[in-house]
Length: 359
Image 1 (tube, one colour):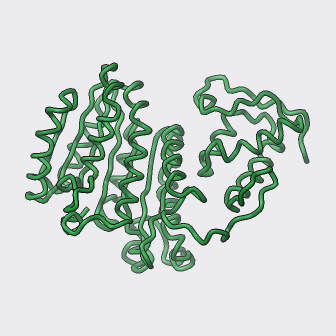
Image 2 (cartoon, one colour):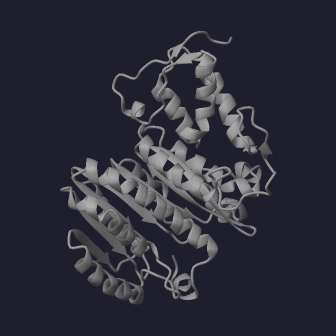
């Protein structure tokens, strides 16, 4: 975040961005605490810790989440490191003053505060993240689009157990395709043929293609609308459970589609459901259910893990798939499907038992 943003106070769009970061962090911390020897949460554009009105910035949100799970933390042996950086000397001084207080309150947490350009501190952070037994969440609230270069993104993808969440001023790509398109590997023609409101989705897809050589890496995003400007967050994780937890946060903010901070009118894009629900169901959800039904009925030797993966990679949660599962169970097409995320990790995934298939 820029210094002016902190001095002027956070906009509603910034609050959405921080809410998404907060929700994900709170959801994910128990997993990090219980499964790893060391957890690092890093913010290279940390700012002073809050805006002029006292609204929590990302450093204070990190501390709030750690405070929330303090009892769980006390029951584990995990080492927790909070790595904060800001190149502005005044902001960093204010941040250090806050860290002095937090260190007394949370003596088990190790705080590292740097006053450097993010480009200079990034290699230091990379070494910290690659220590054995380390899991991490890196938050990069960059200015515009330029800091998260293909090389830096590749470094994060190649860093095991690293979750990455970063901000992108997506409208820049639409407005200046010749300058910013190459940064994302997107052609001028692709940008020109993409609707303004869909530009952030195109950017997320470009990052997704860069993870194809790493089967454990997954990318999704969340669009933040501000009038005619489009911004957004890109999220990368090395585990489907991380993707599910991020999506859970997205659906809390956008109950209709789980993808944007600004919905359409109440009946736009909504359709009547055939599954007995009393409310209109977004067309996006209905389309997913049709695809899921086809997948289950037409794919031989489909496992429960396949179904869970398809659901999450489609940007959906278990509750969106449940009506299809219940319908097929009731009609006798499948039997005994638990549909839990545990099937994602099963070394011997159970094959879906189907009575028949539809050709």
